Length: 406
Image 1 (cartoon, rainbow, N blue to C red):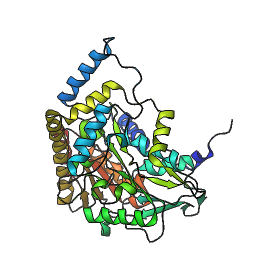
Image 2: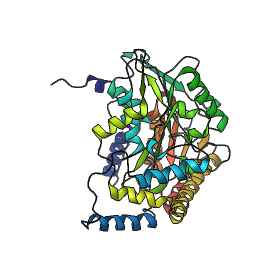
Image 3: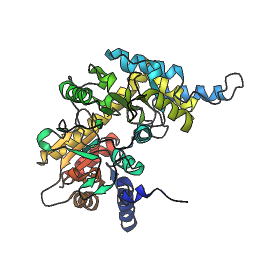
Image 4: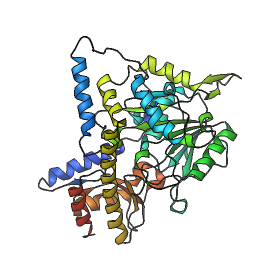
């Protein structure tokens, strides 16, 4: 057997695995330390009560031969896809049909698996800093091409600076595939309508495809920030959107998400013809995937009830309150901060003279707090640090109190 040599081009360890390794080493040397984790973006609140009731009811159905469900449709049950189309899109004036929605086990899986649809030689634009999965999944599949002295032949890093509010600038060259995330992980910033429209206009003019990660859309609180790329005219012709219930409804352990692929999204086959992305994604899913369990999809559908919506909002408001407290604590101490307004993430500049991993060690050793070094999100992330508002109110308050010792 011959292995996939593209794996040689990956970093030795995944960002969050390295964090876990360092924390475990610290705990081994300091077993009495009370560590507060503000790093990995996992939620802490239990599932909404409405979801729990729906899960129990679905389990009862599975225990009765007359209502038992075996293999379901790989693209998701119609009851969930229709609820998504009505509540997440039609309610905001977006024309998205239920059969353009594909239910899955996570936005992380979908953004990585979507690379199965890429041909050879595409010029791929990836923001820097960025969620590592966009980068690593393309390295694994070889879509970036061969390594070069400055990176990879088909990779175009789109640098994000404090001066542009950590939002990538429109490329000056022609790119074929563009990754965008708003509200953003790791920086917590969100694109305005006009900013996102500029990207759609660029994609249409250059026949490029936008892969739009909207996993944190439920955290948006400011006016003028689109909740979907399909709020922008023309986006159906150039964009795929990924969403998740992980952070919005506590499904990090339950696993449910979805991807939208509009019917009119055609791409070149490289030989003068075209390929339809929706048909390709459907074929990919029916070949490689058996779908999200019925029980889980019933739980997700319950989120669109009046009670489900209220319970989700209450949890999200709590996480945003935590993020705001963290942001304020650092801002009071003179740190440069972003995020924490439309996203659960706070992005800050580390003290001058320290690297992001040195600042990680400072927080862990002095305050017993765990965050995420910005360098793990790309070269432009060096000198910055990410913290999250996903802790409990009590633990977040304790973390903020400890920050007063900085």
